Length: 285
Image (cartoon, rainbow, N blue to C red; front, side, top):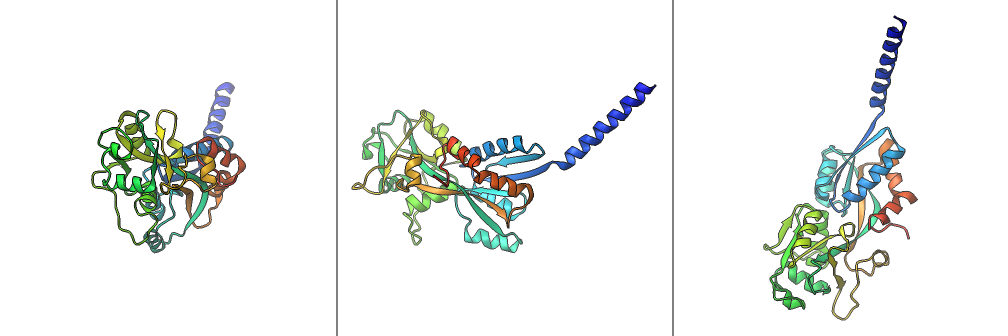
């Protein structure tokens, strides 16, 4: 009888502990840029190991999706490969949300082609003409006599926006140039990578975190007279690679609690080492 009572007491205590532990779990919802989703996931996995009472959910969908979630108060952190736009800031203010951005890394936007493509370099002007379908055949830029298959991210992607502003519009705020209607809009950077991997005529752009030796990255120059620069960490840090950008985490106002602890972790020496390990560029040398 005593054994039965003892077992019952232990069971009750275990149940109580389980309930208390579940109540102590602190959750973070992170949504946004597909470009840095892999980096955020590594941060999250390492963070949870040292903070076992935390739970972090990471979802991609694009920078626009992240900002929409932050504005609608359905996430704690929006991850983005661009700064918040004015119209998004207005919507946020209307919903009593005060977006605050933290620069957590840098990224070089890499132009990729199939390994069997003989083209190794392009100027920004050539890239623009390709993505606007003014150049339509690889032979026009030193390649085979094959039609160029243009791959782009969808319009809600920060990667799409950055490439349009930097390459298509050449940082001209008065330009209304757009991607060609013949561009294939892909749902994610992974989708662009997968298509380039199997299509010898495809050309697309992805973040540095998606690059490996199974595909070819192109060196880029601002014009024919200047040096063509390969997309490396060193060239992004020193600013010589023409297509690079900062990466952000946005919160609603000053972060607090577990969200603040996580932001601090991403900016720590350990967090910034993970930036390097996942092929992005740290904010500090």
